[in-house]
Length: 233
Image 1: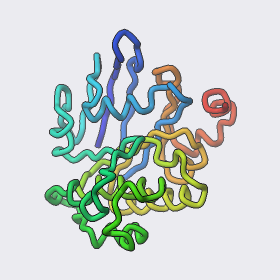
Image 2: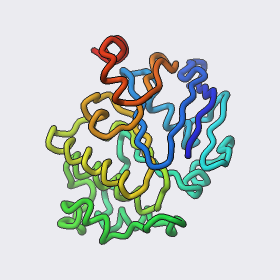
Image 3: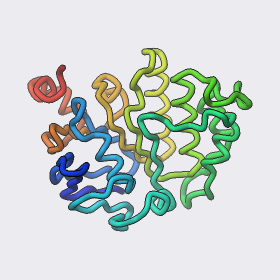
Image 4: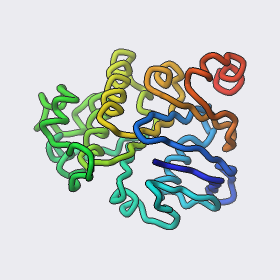
């Protein structure tokens, strides 16, 4: 569904990504792992057009996304949940969801408020609560729900478990598995190996903007030397 080829990106003169490449198959969860500063968030931002790649290609469902604006990429079926969530603090849960609404995607069951309240029952109980009066875990759920209202075929999640209590992280893992069961492909950037293990089919490891490992999640967990070398603190 998504193919990244030779992707490079800069912030000013700083070289952040150096020719990375990987694929996200339809119906699978792929996790980009790495320490702080490895380039995980920049990878997702480059795919979404929020950072302009200096080289390489991003191909989604057979279409080259080069030079596309973020809103055009969203219209092609990608949804993005940033690390800082960016919910509208003054708007209620219901209003935040309305902002994200887009037409249904062919071949996928459309997301509605009712379906999202089934997926996130706590949101259903606070439909009129402003986003700024919600906990971090509730805001993360709202950010994902708002993105799902756009009916994406591929969902990009940037550090979805960061700063959340362990019980909320468990719920988030369950949510990702449910979304996969709905037919979504998911690409997530993550540092939490336990969370990644709970949800991912495949893993990619970045170090200083370079691809160091790409393979099945189970194979990575069986290779202690690799994950200790690239992921241990």
